[in-house]
Amino acid sequence: MERLYLPAAIAGIKVTLRHFFMRKVTMQYPEERWVVPEGYRGAPYLVKDQEGRTKCVSCQLCEFVCPPKAIRITPPGPQPNPTVGNVEKIPAEFNINMLRCIFCGLCQEVCPEEAIFLMKDYSLVGVARKDMIYNKEKLLSLGGTHNDQIHKWKRKADEAREQGLKV
Amino acid sequence: MAWIDNLSAAQQFVFLSLLKVVGAIAVVLPIVAYAVYAERKISAAVQDRIGPNRVGWFGLLQPLADGVKSFLKEDFVPAHVRKVYFWLAPAIVMIPSLVTLAVIPFGPTVGTRKLVIADLNVGILYTLGIVSLGVYGIVLAGYASNSKYPFMGGIRSSAQMISYEIAMGLSVIPVFLLVGDLNLSSVVGYQSHGLLSWLVFKQPVAFAIFLGAAFAETNRLPFDLPEAEQELAGGYNVEYSSMKFALFFMGEYANMVASSAMMVTLFFGGWTLPFFGLDQPSVSLSVGILHILIFLGKVVGLLGFFIWVRWMWPRFRYDQLMALGWKRFVPIALANILITAVWLWANK
Image (cartoon, rainbow over all chains, first blue to last red; front, top):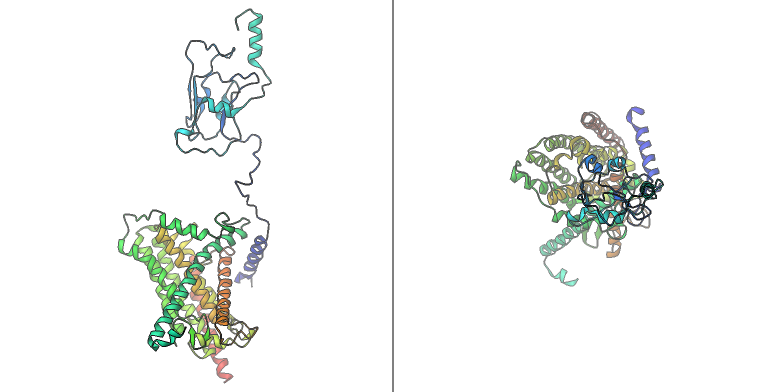
């Protein structure tokens, strides 16, 4: 009897009928969205600290480590930028090409200043390739404020003031 | 409707036949389109997901969207194909499926007008002949594509279809032995005496073999090796795009519809229903239409079964398939014929 595959066929009937009437797992996407878990590797954005300073210091480590070379940084020239506090080298230009980014997170891992983070954006949309190259302003505005516990530059500013240097 | 009676008999015949042809095609083609939709929905339900539900209420306009896509997609013809056969093959696949519908009775004789397009006295012979023609389209597609996978798909498909045609033909002989007449309307008439006179109960073995052979003829799982996505990357329709591919697809589903219609006529009582006196030829047009709807309901039910089986049972290996056709179906069908004939002779 079993060689005729009848038990297997009947098992197939039972399984498909059961699944036909089970609750479906489909999520109606644009109306219902899933909860993005913590640590999700979405799009990379630059952050400011609590005093509004851009944390990036143009060390260009992220540009070096990025596998598809999506990040392009232009460091500032030798003249000091009078508008910044004592954060030394805010980049003149910082472009990430979101079409090249592979969301690996290596730039976030390698950054010594905790200035770039992969946040929770997963659906990036644009109508032209140019629009998908995000520049410094856009990245900063999308990145928001990072809750900095270390306050590295504030402590350095306080030390410099104690030593009588111009801050 | 008096002007119809003013025409001569020949003109009446032509006019009514044209009406029936147009009606049949106008009903079958939407059924084919919605069979694709039903397949997507049923397969989705069995796999714990929802099928198409964005285009119109519950996704019911999805076939329309598919049709628009087929028309607008680039109809790419690869450089290495044999052009004439490449263009002909989809048409040759579609034609036998639609032509088979000519002998199937959709309903009883309404007044004096029959509801079958061609009331042939050798109905089943015509059907078996046309089904044999269905092999050519696929073989031509496989040959014309001039590439590995379609070729293998075409070869396997032709061997499979030829083998199961024999099983199919042999399996319905007992049905006609019981009915005594090859005319398909008489087959329906034979089954109109209550539920147990349906031939599926009187000839279950014939029904089982015909069902299996119908699955094999339409290249449908569990016998769909010629177009298996995992084995053959799509088989004979791999080099086709847009409208030609759509024609292949529709031809396969039209074949399914034709096989279902055949099975309903031969085994499930055609347009009769054993309750409410619906198994007698009708006298009014509305009851005639009810009969047609009953027929369509049964065809749709069988189509649902075809679709359900696809997502339920695994595929046969090629040697298992051929062994099943030749070494099991044919001897069992022959034995069935013998037993039926002996039983009829003994009970004369």
